[in-house]
Length: 555
Image (tube, rainbow, N blue to C red; front, side, top):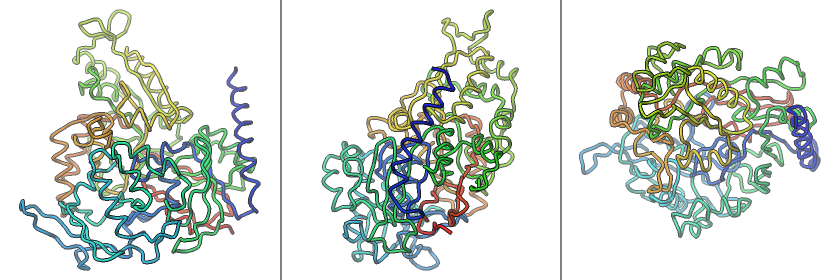
């Protein structure tokens, strides 16, 4: 089948999917959103997939998060504990180190969707799940640092944390679970990922306490959310929100033009090149907003691959890739080339960090030194006669990633490296391949971070997923560096900003030298919004716009 015929068929199928859902509600009572991926699971503690966080942002609320101004704010709590207001109290631990006691109060009227109050019982249960070595959650470190929890009453509790960090009151990843529903599923901790009601009974109203609750799920296709009658805050303007997963940008645009979608999410929606083309056609019904932020596209390197274990090979790959040209051609200046995982927008970014300009001669010298000289046919082989071969993987259907992947394949083949592509649907790629450290060479995806985000879960040795920890952690490449571990540990407990800046510079220098990832770009997310939709405010970091969905309205 030709490309044109495949594309036409894709558009027809996408349009067919859109129509029945869009016709069920009165105009402006319903909002239909397009995203490019479907969540691999719905448990808020397992994995950090953007699609899931986007959807759950409407049904749950973290205790704390960063807002659009990159300031830490309370959502589920009533007041941020600080040393100044007395709700955060430094403690000296038996080992002589500094900890901190943090007192939070849950929103008094917060209730789960089945009417059960959100209480400290849920806090204690979530801590039990989070710290269990077999639960398989993404950020177990947060829960392991909590040495005790004192319960004052049904709504107030104190966390005793073993480290006094610079961001001591940010417990963004402490996403509470409903103890009255999930305790039975946790009877088998190792099987909790699959037994959780978020997986087996996703539409159970008792799983949600935000302005919306999930009422319908068609796996791989769409999620329906309806207004939650137990929500304590500002009433949402829309009775019903439909989030549809449509992987290809042309199909997203076709659904938008046909009326099957009202908007396309910026967090994971239309690719930048597609948005630029859409904008050039000057569609007056929509606004396109490009939000630069802390989304970092990169190749995560499997450093346990014998060839890639040598950092000279990793450095050669980056020298051999003309990222400036790639970004100009694909993104037309809307995105920036990345030097490390720290975005220049962040205060702790070091402008003097090592750069990797396009230099094929130097790349070749590094490969020669690493034991991969080029033969008469141009192919690089080691002393055993084995070819230098790499496999690139990413999410199938994401055009920008696939184009970057092709660009890298062609560039590295010119260096004499054998490069093959093997892409997978997002659910498989993130839920199995990346999560289980199951890619042979390089995996192209993005990390989404918060302001001044310490990369413990992605770079610390303790965060390498393995069967022993039930594949918890996000250090999917297997990078282990005692020096990196020490820097991460030091940054977290340094409260002096100037001293912390020095440590951040050292971390970025080590990252640029070791290259556990091959940095590509910092993304600008295109939000395609109808002119009648107001209140959507992109954050530029990992907190999705949906955390403030109650402010969205039609005018």
